[in-house]
Amino acid sequence: MRTGAVIAAAGRPGGYSSYDGLEHIKGSSMVRRMISTFRRAGVEDIVIVTGYRAEETEKDLVKLGAVFLRMDNYEDEQMLDFAVRGISYLADTCDRIFFCPADVPLFSEKTVREMMDRASPVVIPVCGGRKGHPVLIDAGLSGRIASYVGERGLKGALDDSGAEPVFVQVDDRGVLAAAGKDPGFEDKARYECPARIYPKVKVQLVRNVPFFGPGMMVILKQIQILGNVREACEKAGMSYSKGWSLIHTAEKELGWVIVERSPGGKYGGTARVSEKGLLLMNCYEQLERELAEEAEKKYNEIFGESGLDL
Image (tube, one colour):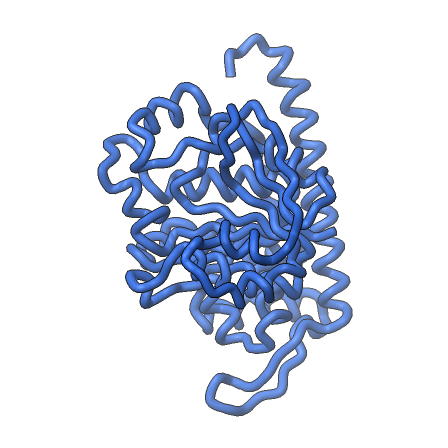
């Protein structure tokens, strides 16, 4: 079962403006933390919906392998609009999708894993009797959420969908802490819910030169969804020429075609990942996942015995 995540950083409420008044914390560092938490818990595909200060957001986070969906009219949109945009984008490739506004970044990897273990169309964390974020939604609900007409936002859309939610009791105050709303947010981020230290392994395939890594994976995933290299590069925050350079280098090193294309047209024709390319992607993801798990074990073993207070 494949799980994705949507982080709404587009609008003023729940987006980057929540961090404008903080002295020691940047919005980009908090979204970076959210991406890391989701990834360590096994969430494969991450979408960031941008709008307010979009160029800054995308520039700061472009190397993290997320997809950017920009809402140019974000000032006229609501949080539900951001949720619909991201969830609809992932619905065909993921079975379940987390949704979280960018101003609630302190939830833990443990909470994400506990939520993923629950078999329900809607899973909501609860701490101290209060509902929090992120929310986990079955991709099959995307159409009903998108068709909701009402003024109660995502909660109203989920209620109207008829899905019975499961509430997971967690000992994680990070699911409630919101930047711009919680006066003690900075202290919570730095002391009560600090980001944990973990090993990060960057996996690259190399022959004569490095030719396949996280950047290629993002491009290929988007080509499969969009059928167009130019659009895939835009969503990945990468120039068209850079994207094709990565593809050409990989195909030269491998000696076979990764992206099958039909040239022509205003946007460069259509494209899709070849069967061997899809197999390569699956093998790479498995290798990346198993190496990350092994690195975590070794980290706990080596640093746990070191006596360092990490």
